[in-house]
Image 1 (cartoon, rainbow, N blue to C red):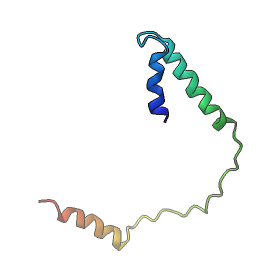
Image 2 (image 1 turned 180 degrees about the vertical axis):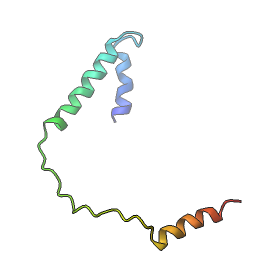
Image 3 (image 1 turned 90 degrees about the horizontal axis):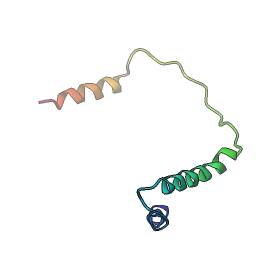
Length: 71
C-alpha cells in the first residue's frame, strides 16, 4: 500500500525539486519514531558453548561431498 501510494506523491510537486525528497525523509523519520520510543526487554541468551577445533564426521563429509561434484 505504501509503495503504490508513494507514486501519488508525484502529483503534489515537481519531481525535479527537493520538496518531494524532503517530504519522503520526513515521512520515513516519523515512521521510525514509534520504534525508537518502544520499550522492550533484552532477550535471554543461552550459555555460550566453546568452539570445537576438530570438525565432526558430518562436517568432513559435507566438505568432501562438495569436492566430489567438481568436474
